[in-house]
Amino acid sequence: MATAFDFAKASYAKFGVDVEAAIAKLQEIPVALHCWQGDDVTGFDHDGPLTGGIQTTGNYPGKARTPEELMADMDKAMSLCPGKKKLNLHACYAIFEKGEYVDRDKLEPKHFQKWVEFAKARGMGIDFNPTFFSHPKVKDGLTLSSPDEETRRFWVEHGKACIRISEYFARETGVPCVMNIWIGDGFKDIPADRMGPRMRYKQSIEEILAEPFDKNLVKPCVESKVFGIGVESYTAGSAEFTLSFAASHDGVLPLMDNGHYHPTEVVSDKIPALLCFYPEIALHITRGVRWDSDHVLLFDDETKEMAKEIVRCDALDRVYMALDYFDASINRISAWTVGFRSWQKALLAALCTPNAALKTLQDEGRFTELMMMQEQMKLLPFGEVWNEYCRSCGVEAGPEWFEEIKSYENKILSERK
Ligand code: RNT
Ligand code: ZN
Image 1 (cartoon, rainbow, N blue to C red):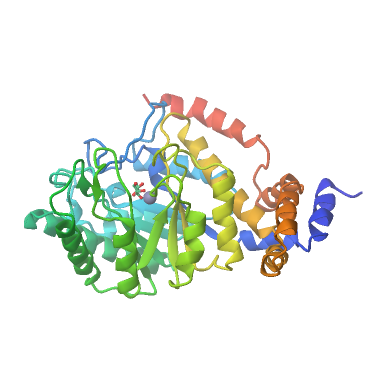
Image 2 (image 1 turned 30 degrees about the vertical axis):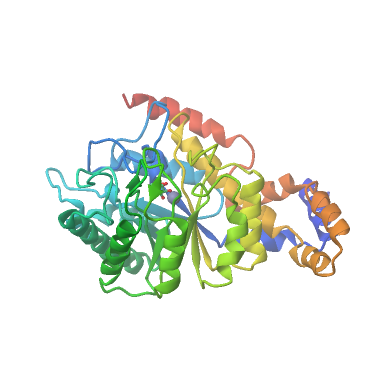
């Protein structure tokens, strides 16, 4: 008897789309899941507040307090998500032995050994981020761009330590490590010198990258930002700064976070622009509501459009995709799961789009028909393809996965007071 999926397959085939090929392809594409959704970007190396102009809001009970809890929570989330995962860590998630502590400039691979074991046991690669915030050595809101040489040096040493750790991750897992440099450095009010901090930031990144590393193993990125909370007037690592830095330094990738632009700018349009010039680029995928609020990713129009661009530029192997959001107002494991599943849906929908046929309509100037067809595509039975994809990955397609969240919350999270 023909199944609902058979009908869906036939509906797509009419438009020349092979949904089984799309499903097989998506199973191979890694997406990095960020550890910091699990504990509101706190980490294990400090007790202070979250700084750097980023904020989590909400006080949902049950946040992870230890490496063991965080790993267990991530495991739970990942077990509910289809697709291939990569682990995304921040340096502040270093794991110290009892009584041990080293500052960020002295971090070593051994402080991440437990994470490596975690990743290897699950067949995952690891991405890494130096943590240039939430630390007493952030001076007047500045790190790598600080005019205070001691401060700047400390953070350069942190960056170098992270290069060494990134290479260790890549060697251990056999998967290249994307190392993303993002600093919150900036000013609340109108600066008297905009170029000075940028020149120092440039010099600092160059000093970090002078640490020897294998370019096939470590992929350094620079992430831009337009503003932060309390840093509204000026950001050292602006879009022009980071793009120019990446363009002028061999092997450095630009990283676009879609929360980091003015509200009418769209990263979906920037992806193909950058792909004209860079062999590889990186993304932080998030959802901003009115500002860079880092809401949980949903299967919404711009999310779909970003995925479509990656797929129709045939760039799934040139774009490193990582999720970056943090919501403390809802169950954090559900937040991870909904966001990861949303990006999987967006990629799957993009892979089930007759991109070549639509491109032909554009190139032949048949814009009336193109509009009609793009609207028509929206009504194809995508839900059935999603169901089949989830089945093929051994996870629940429907809301049944939420039962797992509820019981985990009752059994495990409720014990965390
Ligand atoms: C901040 C940047 C940055 C952070 C993480 C925690 O606006 O998006 O990527 O979210 O490093
Ligand atoms: Zn980001």
